[in-house]
Amino acid sequence: MPSASDHVTELVVFTLLFLLVSGMGFAAARWRRAESLDHLDEWGLGGRNFGTWITWFLLGGDLYTAYTFVAVPALVFASGAIGFYAVPYTILIYPMAFLVMTRLWSVSYRHGYVTPADFVRGRFGSPTLALLVAITGIVATMPYIALQLIGIEAVLKVMGVTGHLPIVIAFLILAVYTYSSGLRAPALIAFVKDTLIYLVIIVAVIVIPYKLGGWDVIFGSAETALGQTNPNTGAPKGSILLNANNQLQYITLALGSALALFLYPHSLTSVLAAKNRDTIKKNMSALPAYSFLLGLIALLGYMAIAAGIKPIGKDTNTIVPSLFDQMFPDWFAGVCYAAIGIGALVPASIMSIAAANLFTRNVYKEYLKKDATPAQEAATSKITSLVVKVGAVLVILFLDPQFAIDLQLIGGVLILQTLPSVALGVYTRWLHPWALSTGLIAGLAVGIGMLYQIPNPNNGKEHFGGSAYRLSLAGFDTDKQIYVGFVAVLANLIVAVLLTLVLRRAGAPDTPDATRPGDYTVDRSPDAPPPAASGEPAAVAGD
Amino acid sequence: MSSTEPPEDQRSPDSSAWNWLLLVPIVIPLSTPLFNHETPRLAGFPLFYWLQLAFVLLGVGCTALVYNRTKRRD
Image (cartoon, rainbow over all chains, first blue to last red; front, side, top):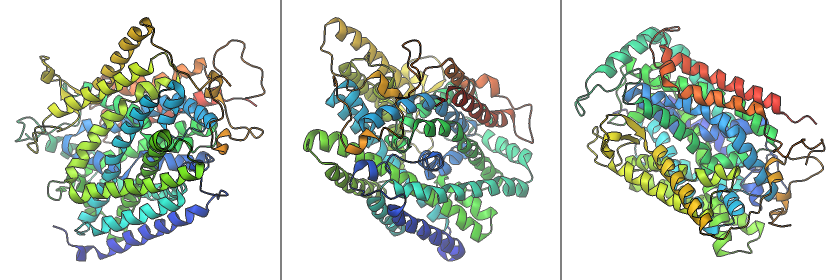
């Protein structure tokens, strides 16, 4: 086990950088200052006024989290090619978001929507459907926040820091500056985060292959190591190419994860903070710079194999920090750890803001206090963001971290079930809200049911062992695997379509649509100030 | 609303034939038979790895082109 006294330089560098960004988090309240932060648009969306650069850093910081940087290489380290799904996943996400997110931005700008459930509420006129979307969003986001802590924990473990106190302190600081600065805090910190990440990765992909003897050697030793038999399954551990059984899984996992990522409430939070449509469109062609980075990060998994890194305990999440520890001088390893640690703060902050906004808009304002003023909304969101982060810390303190990883796996499958109402809703309201609600619930049930059936032979667990579903479990005569979320969302869609046909034929009442076709293409212009600034939706049905 | 002339037909102002180009970077990275090979290698990288990294550029190119062609001129 590593000991903290051997890592003094690393700890000092890590702590200094961590304190620097914490200071920035507090200072962010004054950055691009609004008259007051007592409005959800200001606290939760930074005033909906971020330009191309800030949005690029904010979205990058939001979508590529510390957990990604630690877990994707860990997957490549353990299984090989399948872990590289992260690359196609983050390529195909942007052309899809290019169309859908631009329309969602416009309609949200026009009506003052802050959450995906706000949009569903307006579009389908159904508080029930909106509530289902909001709850799914909150439940899916919570473990994602907890996972960011696991990212920090992996780094601390390699530096020999034990116990949970450092994590609690880090999150306490994060909670306080998010409370006071809102979305401005992660937006400002994201500059530091991404500069550090780019620096670390560019140095890593030059220095480490040089030290290991080149990419030929790295891929060669990965091939040899992955070809060894896994005693738990009797099959090879993995391979550097896909095999006949995991190609379908690779495709569905990449597609399903891409669809899920922009449905997560925190992605929408960063998108809605943009100042106009152009900002979003430009970002969708500039954000893939991060995908390139992520591909290189994934290959750190093979570098770790070639360097003979052994995970601490059984925690493969420690391989990236261990690799840095072995390959770099102490001070630079400290910079690397800070990059991962700060990489956890940015998304954790945005996620807690997104979850808090969902609660405020779609539970508190909808069901508890219909006449809440903008100031009361902002106050509720601020408090809720604290509660959400305390919840994440409690998960880490009192539950097995593996539990958070399982929940996150489920979370991705859950959030995908909001696809028909949110993403398709941007284009059509042909699907009936009752059918959408039923489809959502059916999709959740199918998804959780399938995940329950999946064992993990490596740790002896019988349930929730992964997201790759062997088709033989459903009675098919094949060893092929498929991503659970993909099947669940198909089931969801089939139910929604069939039930819509039945409902329409039976003459079920239609619900009002608060949006009009023109709303999906409005843009900010100098002569038309944002309607949202009033705190009230700009238009209601029939006006 | 923009002050330019409304489009001649009733289609939404953000619909354009250029948008179909966005299908390319969605479909190609999902076509595993295209890149699930070890050779030809590039600088030690098996095809599986370098070609998928190259698809990032394909994605950037297609979205940038569509952005450029569908920009509102005002």
